[in-house]
Image 1: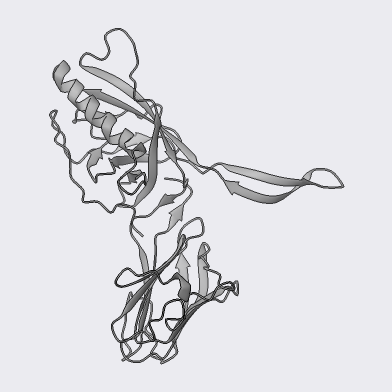
Image 2 (image 1 turned 90 degrees about the vertical axis):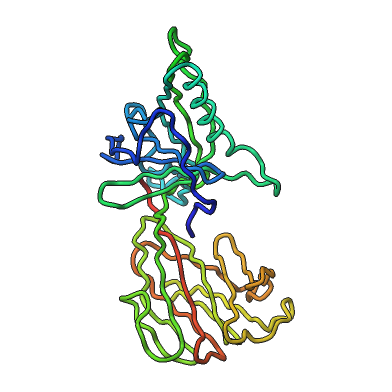
Length: 329
């Protein structure tokens, strides 16, 4: 699902500036960068006409993620890889900040510091909300990563600095080191008259099997999709034909007590983390066929999947949505 949920508001820029000009960044070539803070305010980072901009010399952490390898000694020498665990990512981002005078510089410096450090503040629900760093290429593709401020917004401490300008070398910490495409990939199946949804995926009309198709994950790593089921339906089964993994949702389960999904009623299933919500927000996780359920993901490349609805009729539908994930920006 898309990362940014707050409305985007562009902050005022006393020094001018506009949409930004692509600048050369290490490992990814010419690109533009933006940061969205937890309030939804969008901060351009590569607009050299603004009062703050990125110093390309020193940017790091945009390449492939770091892995911790678990190995077993081999009797004949060497070792064998048993497990690879991806590690959190640290991104170093040098940011030059200036102002028309000391007061203007100080206002910009404080505002930017607040935008980054507020990722460490807990909200009313006790949850910390990350900021979002986005890299956009001239070809129109974009990749995002959720980040928390770690350190570095303290200036250079050199003579002449902190009057009208200074540089902050910021470290941003990403608990999930993979970059996410903000444009979702969707597959739709609906029972009824045959028609086309999310071309080139065809619609299959059936009272039982709504989708038996190949879903392509264009990313570099596994993704865990979100499903939206629209009734009528009495039992929904999701199967990954390649791995044999499957799970089912039973709206008649005793833990729910709802009964069959009626026409137009919807349930949303997230597979990572596992979460099931009825359209009014009720928790339906008890409707999953535990303990045998496996909330499977989609590997990079083609995945053969099937989703079937018992009790389906005209209007029954299943939607699969995911955002591809990548190793690099």
